[in-house]
Each structure stands twice: as structure tokens, then as C-alpha cells.
Length: 609
Ligand code: M6R
Image 1 (cartoon, rainbow, N blue to C red):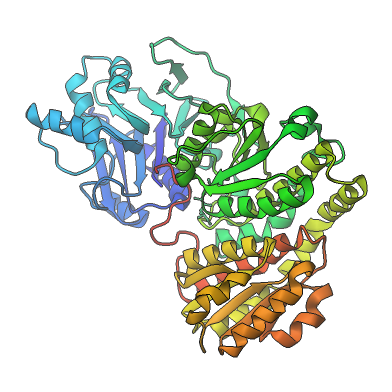
Image 2 (tube, rainbow, N blue to C red; image 1 turned 180 degrees about the vertical axis):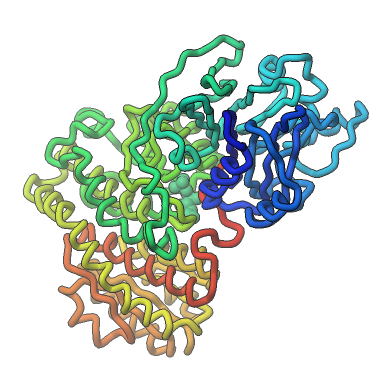
């Protein structure tokens, strides 16, 4: 989704803004632009549709100079991707430049009012409306104008403003969408996302909703919605700049797949001992009284929730409802006494997941979050004490990999810990799971050794235009994630079906030239799966089975191709089996010449609904 950067200091702003935009480009965008305050006070805007390279070419032909500026990568919402709709937008005088993330929901009304008052707007964006409003409201203080503007805006937004009449100052305001700032030795920086600041500083200031900040080369001052100065502490980011770079890998996605062993290790070692479940944000009494768990999330995080349903039901004997957050938030869910709501998000900024969490809290449901990003909106909405962190580190590729695995791992840990608190999990079984979790990073490393075999299989199956994923129980959750991974990076048609459902319709699609990827990691349903494989192969579709060593001999006669993962505890086997599926998606995408890290139409962090 859109990205914002800002800089004020002594160095040429354009280079720093472009560098910041590059580090945000993983979020997905379709146009980009910068505005720089030049020596003579004019606000120079350069913007273009397409990738940053086009903007760079434009800047070669029409350079800008100045040490203050704002920049933006846009992912179109209001209005098509075009030069005119790209940010920054200026007011009618051209002296105020604005970049904006989010959606202004009362944009139509504001636009009509402006047009009725004689304003002529050039594009279709809600951001231009903000710029126009600011220009008309400005009375000499941009800080005061932004405080007034907030009263008019509805929706979620993060806005950065540069005003020609106020040199030496950049302004920003936010509600719902993230903004972070940093200061070091005569320079201040602004961004919508932490990775864009890491190159300059790891001590960042996270703006809260309805706060306005003024950046100068002396520091960052934050004001509340009434204009009162709020002294704010900075937050030290544990992620390093290197962790947000490719480090020799061809793509972020491949790098992040390979970072999974370490991410699993860090998440397990965070001090969350299954046998001493005090780290859970619910106490023994609450755990014992729980009647239901509801999980809401989007995309891959939702699939981690589907997997969690099986783990929570088996280990903690709790009924679980899993729902995509965009559905949960609008269906007037019936809150139950003794219900626990869990929001799951890598970014912590997904608009639907945040809204679902807010809805649950509004209905009085005890709510916690699983999140990968410290200080994110979802972590803050749940409250730090109610947030459990995955330790995946920055995930840059649009396709989520290491965040998924650590979410699934954390869910198994939560399920076992809740099982201990509720007395549904024998200590001996908890010990087995703890030992298996301890071994999991090593097993994930071994699983990564399948990479070359998977690459060759992808060469072989590259002609397949339709790929089905199937499994039972936890492997059905795995199949859903495998299908999502493949479709988002390779654009192949891929769909997941519970193996027991194949006969109820989808089998009609099976024929020669179609591939079915089957996860077979759960011994209690293995024979059922083998019967399903026979049905699939009888329709001339090909089968690629993924199974642990201990099941390999039994599975082999029933499959065309097989990927064998190391043995582990049954409740963790689908996590290991996800790794070959991720690599399968990755190589299919490469063979098909797709943009692996920034697939078409997708954004990393979906901050609009
Ligand atoms: O940051 P979140 O975990 O809340 O993101 C949720 C989804 O947008 C995300 O998982 C998306 O589906 C990924 N592109 C999947 O690879």
C-alpha cells in the first residue's frame, strides 16, 4: 500500500526521499512522487505513474534542490494510477504539498463543498481534496490548520505536509494509519513504516492517533488534538537495517523462507515456556472458564488461524471459530461470556483486522493480538500486555512466509499453554511438544535442503495452469496457505479443498495436465488421504505429496512425486510442510517470470478495507 517519507536537514532531500521510498517499495505501489522546498521558497513537485525508476528519470531531466521534502509511493484507491493522481498533491496556490495514506471516507462531500465554493480539482484523489482544504483554511500556522482539518476528516489517514510559507518545518498528522519519525544530529525523518527509517536511526517515535507532529532539524515535537505539546519517548527498534535487506538472495521472499529456522527459534525462545504458562495474557481462572475462542485475521494470518483451530481444539479442548476479519467486523457477531478473541497480523496495520479487534473490544470480548510488529496499531489497540509477538523480524516480500510459520508456531505454543492451564493437556504431552518445538528450527533447516528438488519439480510442472491443494485436518489449513502462496506470486489458478470435499464437486475439474499438491502429515487420516489420492490419479491428474519420513513408504505408491520432510510432532508437521509449498510457489513464479517480491495488484500492508 502507499508509503510516506519526509526529510528535513542539511543534505539534498531528493536523494534521501528516493532512498526512503525504495525501502518502502515492498509495500506495493503504482506511482511515486516527491515535493522539495527549493532555496527560493517554491515547492517543486515531481511525480509519475509507474515504478520509482520513472521518477528517477524524471528527476534527471527536471532536478530539484533543497533540504526539506516529502515523498510518496501510491497504491491507487480513489482514481486510477496516473501522473495526475500520483502524490504529492498541492493546494490551488501550489505552495502547500501533501502526501497521504489511507482513505478519507467523507471525501465526496468535502469535494462537492470545495467545488461549490469554486475550487477546480485536477485529479480524482481524496488527497487533492486535503491539499485544497488546507490551502483554503491556512491562516499562517500549518500546525493550527492541521488541528482544524482533523475535525473535518472521516476515515483512516496519515498525512504529511510541507508548506512553502513555513520553511524549516515539516508537518504530519495521523488517525488509523501509521506514521513514525526519528531525529539525529541536525536531521529529522518521517515515514509510514519503520524499515524506511532504519538506515538513519533505530530510535523512532511512533505517533498516536490524532497526534500532529512538527519536524525541524532540531527535533520532532508532538501535539495532541487540542494543540498541547506532548513530550514523547522514542522506541528502540530491535530490527537492524541489514535484516531489511536482501543479503545476497535473489529475492526477499527466498531470503525470508531461509530465515524461518531462526525466526522459529527466536519465537520459541522468547521465554514462553509451555510448562509455565504465566506468559499468556489470560490467567488460570480465565483459561478454565473459557467457552469459546474466536480468531479473526486476513490472508496468510487467517490461514495461521485456521491451523490454530485444530491445535486449540486438540490441545486445549476449546471450541474455535475462525473468520476473515473483513467478514467478522460487519456481521454483528454475538459476543459470548467467557469468549476469547484473537487478532492475528504480521504488520499490525491491516485495516480489517484492526477493525475486527476494535469491534470485539467494543462488545466487551476479552481480546488479545498476535503480531510481528512492535508498536503497530493492532498491538497498541490490544495493549502491550495483551499482545504476543512473533519474532520473524521485518518481512519485506509481499508473500508472507516467515510470519506465517511463526504465527503457526506461536499458536501451537498458546494451545499447549492453554491446555496446561485448563488441565486438558497432560504434562508428558506438553513436554513432548516443547521438545519438538525446540528441535523445529533444526528440522526446518533440513527441510530447506529440498530446495533444488523443488526447483526441478517446478520445471516439470511449469506447464500446469491449474493447481489444487488438498489435505485433511491441519493439512487442510496448510493446503489453503499453499494455494494462496502459489496464486499470489505465480498468478496460477490455485485452489484448496479439504480432501473429503473433493468428491462433492471439485473432482469434476480433475483431468490430465492438472496437478494436486497434497499435504499428508497427519497419521490419523493418512489412509483416508491415500484413498483420495487414488481417486485423483484415477482422473489422470498428477499428485505431488508432501509427507514426513515416517509415512513416506506408505505414501509413495499413491503419488507421482513426493517431497519428504523430517519427522516431528504431528501438531508441528504441517509447519514443516509449509516450507516446500512456499518454495514451490517461489520457483513457479520465477519460472513464469513473475515479480516475486511485488506481485501485481498486491500490497504488503493492507491499510484500507
Ligand atoms: O499484515 P497482516 O498479517 O495483517 O496481513 C494480512 C494479509 O494481507 C497478508 O497475509 C497477505 O495475505 C499476504 N500477501 C499473504 O502472503
